[in-house]
Image (cartoon, rainbow, N blue to C red; front, top):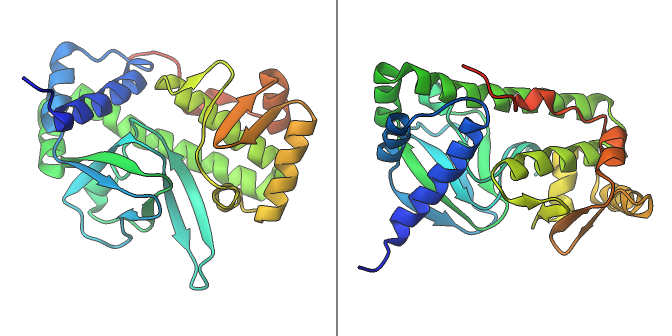
Length: 251
């Protein structure tokens, strides 16, 4: 029989989620099946579209299958601040399960595919599989840790360190779900997106990227980040991945 594209998408989303979870704890076969059964409808959106709008009453959470997504807030004049960039295997709005609405937008930076996870299914997990529920909760704590680093970057890091830190973080997170190689990763976003994620202007971002390139640390060109000197890039960023809690231990 021909393959079911929707089923393949669900398996792809689950595979990335499990890579993240199993890097930090054990997920057994029963828990894997419970997660599989919780996955709902596959959806697609082009770049620039809102996936979850601030204030909307939610009855499901969203698991990213493919593409890049951002959480953001904006001002009346259209200025946008990106709080976090999400990659494959990330829940985009898991905290909406308890909040029932979120206070920011979630939008597609690139064309995306994602899968809905009904809140009823998440509720059953919390009631019947407490370890799995803790792992889902853990993922929201990682989001909070990323947000704290974002505040530190915008408040205290230099312009070049802000960009270097974001590129380091994405390298580690994408490598975790096997979307980065030893030399770098695909990052098909614009310098305007980078500016919105770092609190800089596009002109300033361009200058800092040129500086990172000229110093032999990394290059951002044609939608790809090429890492030339990982150790020095981390030093410039003052990047310490401890906040991503990559160690494997019982949760």
